Length: 175
Image 1 (cartoon, helix red, strand yellow):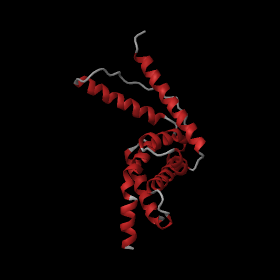
Image 2 (tube, rainbow, N blue to C red):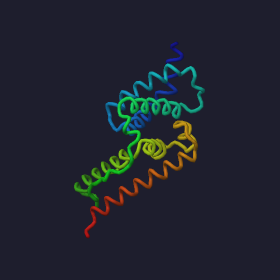
Image 3 (cartoon, rainbow, N blue to C red):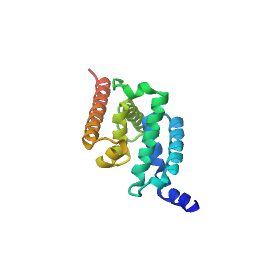
Image 4 (cartoon, rainbow, N blue to C red):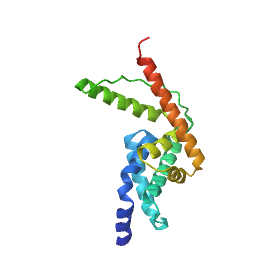
């Protein structure tokens, strides 16, 4: 048993931050993400004997993803069907003054809000690719979907983010 614990700690736990990051983006709530990540770690430990050893990061992200979707189905099922229709806003930035730092922070908040407004399946693909750096194949394995679906979801997520940015620029530009 101690060898199993040591092995789990060495192989899986280094990827816990990536798991939390995915849970946070899928659930859009720090507390829920902490709970789901903790539950996923317990599940991962319970099923660690079945882990083949190929890609511990993708394996843990799969466990976290499944835990997050279970949480959403049990607590917020309507979010799984929500379409992207939120109009987002923020202020444009300019240079390197304290004002710019505030504006840059507002821009980061805007981007976070835009990603959070994506439908969960698009948000998931985007976070796994752009924030966690997974390959299309790894995303397909984690989400249990074909690579073509991964590509489609990423494309649609990017188009929706571009549309949000365009709406923001349009709203901020003088007429």
